[in-house]
Image (cartoon, rainbow, N blue to C red):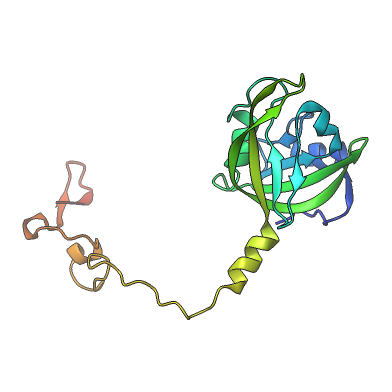
Length: 196
């Protein structure tokens, strides 16, 4: 989901992002608490701060994490970007064109990160986080290119391949010993329940 943004179009950081989603007013990674989105901003301005983002020939993107001085840490914004998918958030990438004008590059998925020695804002070498961002379109193309029906599904383990219409023991799909069948009972409050 591109959240109404169109690839290649220019947007205003304040009115189109912060006024809509909230999030941090400064920095290249925006992690709004109330919206299911993480926004990453790249651009040449970041090079002076120790961020050497680049698009690779295969359309993936190397995106430097947040942290201008000293070793980067996998906390706060960096953690939010890394775990965006696990947290059910879209990752939108923009390029800073100038004066808070951002060009939408598309929706991406963070496919992990690596530690890399790189200069910080003071030119001191430090461990930096470099995220690998993959365009969502590229992932969809890969899935669409997979052959359909050519690869048989692996067989289910015996404890999952049961007849669900028979006993409660089989409905659990677990190999319970016979003496541990489900038995109904009524508790002190008169509520019906089940126990082993």
